[in-house]
Length: 482
Image (cartoon, rainbow, N blue to C red; front, side, top):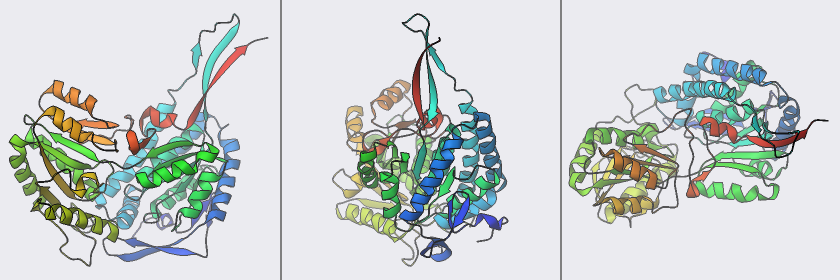
């Protein structure tokens, strides 16, 4: 891995602003080459206890630091991220496989989000209320929750750290990050930059590990951890939800999705196809808000399918460091196996492959961008979070039918709808059971826009002022002066 700032390649844990090396080690692979790129310390529950102790001690001071001092440190962190964006992009692309331009964009977005949080938190103020008792003053203040555990995924390994830890730290919390074992290097690079930004020891800790069970159990059961923020699968999220019950932690859970993408007969097909590409093939389709079920009105189904397949068949698959690559590798063999099952089960039940359909070389983790037509709700793909470059097209006849189909899922993270009828867009957007809806757009993320799921897609929100609110307690004070 060629980095201008070689100090960014940190391979040991980070606790209390110091490197922690473990006798146990695990390898991090480049999914594009399947070669080892680093050997990282494999921390355990003992290290987790040390990190919790460090974060607890640091919290006693950090919560009392004036907000302007916290803002200054975080803005310096953002500056350092921007200054090292190229190297950070190289780290992200190497360990996750995503195209380098997307990886560098992710690192720059981290800096932009920190800046937005820092600006937004300055708008907070106390809320004064009229009191029912003469001489009494009623008002509210916001105070940090405490020590926050952040468990982050591999698909957006930088953004998922900053959206949680950045918000928590600015509100006065201290943090412990447990990154994915597939992509720990970017979280550790952020740790190095946090020290350079003079964030106090113990405010930002990182615990890499191969098996998350030991550390996860400690983070969930330790009463000094007052909040857990997790992004990942619904299955794991439910386990964490239960494990945090004994200590009644605050939880923020961003879990799996099964997003519908609806194209009505009056939709602008050029716009809808652009949106379809963005909603499925960004980050090689490995996105939680990726459209899983494309519902296309029967009158435009054939044309939409043909034009989409033509676009998809021209996409280039390759190493993320190749500027011509549109689609990078899947993260591991399990992802390949899942996509293969989705396609094979669908074609056995009558679906047809219009583009792609598998691997060019089974010795790699590259998978062809694929379009399937003739899909039906009884196929496994209908309830599978595809998490790869495979588009499944279903037909529908009317609005009531498609809304019912779209909502026929336990997930409720994202949804998309395309139509030229503004009243229909508003009506269907309100009817769809999802935390965020793209109406004639697949661009559904913004720093000032809250993001999160409903139903079994999670609890709480990230981004926006609501993302900061997750990390504070609002205290009511009823004061009578003597």
